[in-house]
Length: 568
Ligand SMILES: *[C@@H]1O[C@H](CO)[C@@H](O)[C@H](O)[C@H]1NC(C)=O
Ligand SMILES: *[C@@H]1O[C@H](CO)[C@@H](O)[C@H](O)[C@H]1NC(C)=O
Image (cartoon, rainbow, N blue to C red; front, side):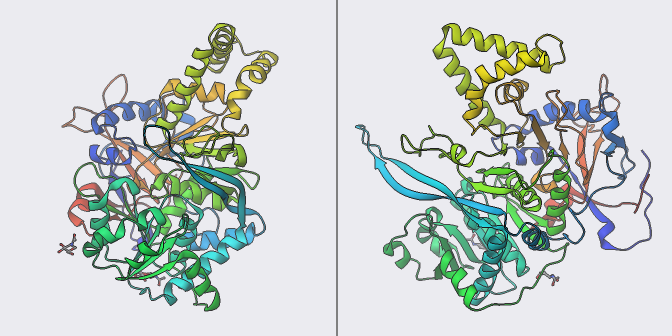
């Protein structure tokens, strides 16, 4: 691979950074703490077989980028990198505003009605919360956009200063997206904090970014009084009333101006403030993720990064559109979920909110005899992390094992017939036979996830071949695997939906280049056989700006290169 020909164009938009995904970075993206070294060893061969192997050469072409010698690839379905989902959608704010006009009367954000909350206390003295949840209540795209506009005005009216940051610290829910979009409309950077990071990380993140407004749910609100002396930059609290908040908690908030989410929306509705829209290179989100060790680092994600990943992922999901229904339940403070929901908003898809604890009829927090989120929503699209899919697989296998006898025999037989068919054998691939197994054996399993799921996106860690096959057979859906980091705004590589092979992460997303560079200290070189090995380097529109307030780490991980404007 040759040097990049630096063109004379000084336009900053052609200046892109290349993130070197070193071992700790890879670890960053893992949701369940996979050891970095393992990931490096596992993921790289995966990338190699899928991107550099003969089989998929059609889908990734060699590209000539970056200074160092290496094997660089980009997605060959496009003549150049994709940057925006459609013309004009250059920021998250513009994307949502345009989507709200395009799909205005369509269902946008849905939340289940809380009918009843009760506690059961088994004899052992523990106490469990059980929820009786009803139907989804929907905001249309027009309504959701309106709420974001009101929230934006209310936030400023409440006293939030335009030169300071707002943070969101809440479980995944409709208000999260409304608050974030509200902030974007005032060109405010949103700081997000992974809820499981703990108190020290929360204090550190809010202090480092000098957050003046914190938007949180009732669960997080209760934690604030205890750490109030450490939250020196904080001036305003906006709490989401997902649970009743008692007067005592609110009394302890007297250090800050405290309003409920509804009050802020109402304030904005009655006193409009003009939008102050951001540009594509402005920072949309500073995302604090689980660092490998020590304090978490805040990754600065621009509007341009988010829309580029969105544009790329939209090309990956087959027939994505207004008839789709998406179940949202993973943490929005994670780039994977934020990117997925943005893809849904850009496509006119309905987003129904749920949670891991209320997902199925038998989930922990679901009151006996009432319905879980999937049964009510009947989603067509879901995203997941391998750990969750593994759990579903184990649960199904366990249940089949418990039934034993003829049920187990039939299940095993049907499973193996389908497995052979998927892996390309003529054995078991006769369509009428597959239909029979599908209806008798696998339909009840599909019903566990509502019966309509047609595509699952999986990311965060490598998915085992067994689990991928289980999803293909028992749920009858393709599983798309994503590979990326917060630093690459989720995007790097994504498997093609019609690629039935296992253990691959697919070609580069069309918004970026992926390059393999020899990693001498680690003993990996690009001339290794039977396949090249090395360090994965990612470049393109989805590469973030760097770490907030941490030039040393930014310079270590990110390298700035010029890309030639066009290439063949
Ligand atoms: C907040 O940040 C400042 C530096 O900006 C530091 O001196 C101070 O100790 C930090 N406070 C906390 C509670 O972390
Ligand atoms: C958005 O805010 C940032 C930071 O305050 C500022 O540098 C930038 O110029 C603003 N963008 C626009 C389009 O005004």
